Image 1 (cartoon, rainbow over the protein chains, first blue to last red):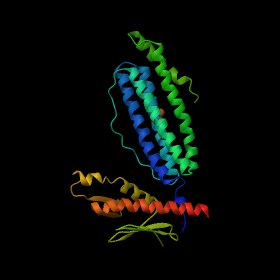
Image 2 (cartoon, rainbow over the protein chains, first blue to last red):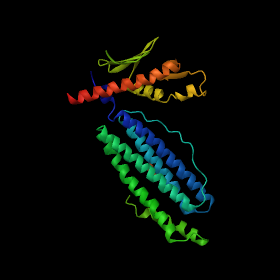
Image 3 (spheres, rainbow over the protein chains, first blue to last red):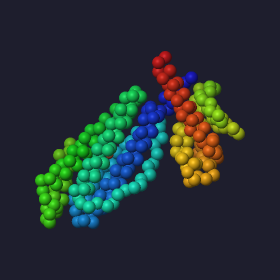
Image 4 (tube, each protein chain N blue to C red):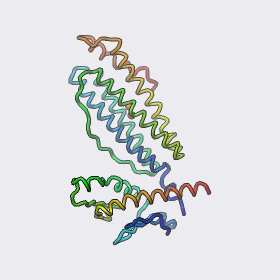
Length: 176
Length: 104
Ligand SMILES: [Fe+2]
Ligand SMILES: [Fe+2]
């Protein structure tokens, strides 16, 4: 019997399912960052707002990368539904901490797919995901640098304003 | 044409010559390309069996449209349970076939 699956699909079906789940996660990240951007805007933290607007755009790019990868390789990507986006935060520090937790969860999810790829000998997807592993490393580092600012600088009165002005720099160290 | 998998109500076949699949339902048989088979699989996976038993879906019916809305199906609870097993079994056979093809 011919291997019709392999003729049509370059990646493993089970891995494809996980990639579709990852699409949902990246879409959720994008929406979560957008909510954070909105909170920053309303609290007159415009540098942080810009930072999260950009994060939201990046997460959408991640989503699209996976989306196209699935379809280009003969699979079917599903447009994600996003629900349960949190808009309530008590401080900017809480936002960055949430952002770091979110990135760590995404890193774990990516690692989990790589693990599955290895089990199923799906080297095509494993190779594709290498970029995401490096990206996640940088994303975590960026969020940690933001949290370091909170440790170094106060957030009383003008402190928070000064901290906000420093936010664009946490990206600068990133090798683009 | 070779049988991939047979469940209580459904049978899947692979046709090497036409490079496609056939699914035999109790009242009709349909032809599917690989993508359409994948889409069918996804729809079956999304069936929430719990809703048949907790009152959310009191009639216990699921409606599925296949192959760009060419075919329309209504399945009852028993058929839905069987359908899930059927899809899992069919794709397991496809995977087994891939492994065999690889090792030859
Ligand atoms: Fe991402
Ligand atoms: Fe990210």
